[in-house]
Image (tube, rainbow, N blue to C red; front, side, top):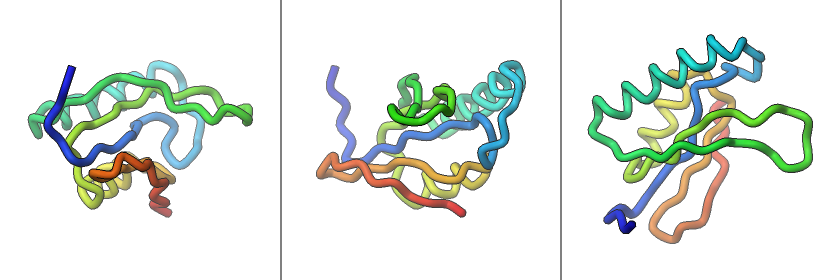
Length: 99
């Protein structure tokens, strides 16, 4: 499948500011994030965000196609995240710290 976009962001609504929530609370936050992305008519794919070498559990996340860097940062801040991952036309992911 091919999407005609030149940027993307990987973000989650789970575990705000690294505070572990229950599975139900995280599901509600992800649902709210999905509704916001849908309202903005953005294409997004489900994924799991997990660092391979630490003990933090994987978090349900979305790869949001066509979401520009600043808009992604604003959305990440709204969902109380410490950081998000963005990439531009070069496809190179960059960690964007939000706090």
